[in-house]
Length: 226
Image 1 (tube, helix red, strand yellow):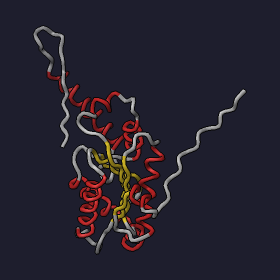
Image 2 (cartoon, helix red, strand yellow; image 1 turned 90 degrees about the horizontal axis):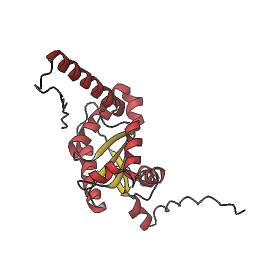
Image 3 (cartoon, one colour; image 1 turned 90 degrees about the vertical axis):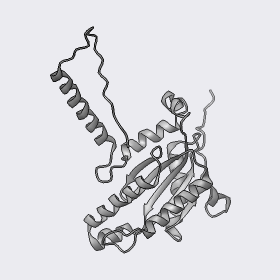
Image 4 (cartoon, one colour; image 1 turned 30 degrees about the horizontal axis):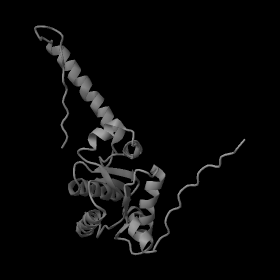
């Protein structure tokens, strides 16, 4: 859904640029764009890869980032999500990695179709995915993620009877470090995986309900007085 534009400016008063030179610039631009996309995109699913994840999450958590401040007028990160395919190892073991890759690809396509263009979608690693949802309340996120979970459970994946996903999410708190943010969503995801699977749970709701303990804030380093 994105469009890229190459703008060429000339200091020539007659504004004449040789066609061969324009073609050279265009091909060079396309080559650089392909390299950039390949650097930050997962080869199988087309979603953002782990390298892009690390850079973008740190960027969104950085309150001093000027680019983020300019974009904040349009959207801001409010929910961080971790998603894992249930019993994915059985698919690989029983049917082979080719069918496992097909499930990953089709799930990624469903994610792209189900979420908005300004939401960030990542393949975190293996059968695990991550998302940053923009301008959405935790209640709306619960409903949206539940609808997606049900959509996957009812989708007909070729050669596989049924695929389900477990989802954990947390509020995107910019006072947290990246490890703390990931840890909160991962704890909610772990609760899903160790209970019913095929469910969506919020870290904050689980803590308030006493179902999981709150993550301890890291202790401040000890300062020696001389």
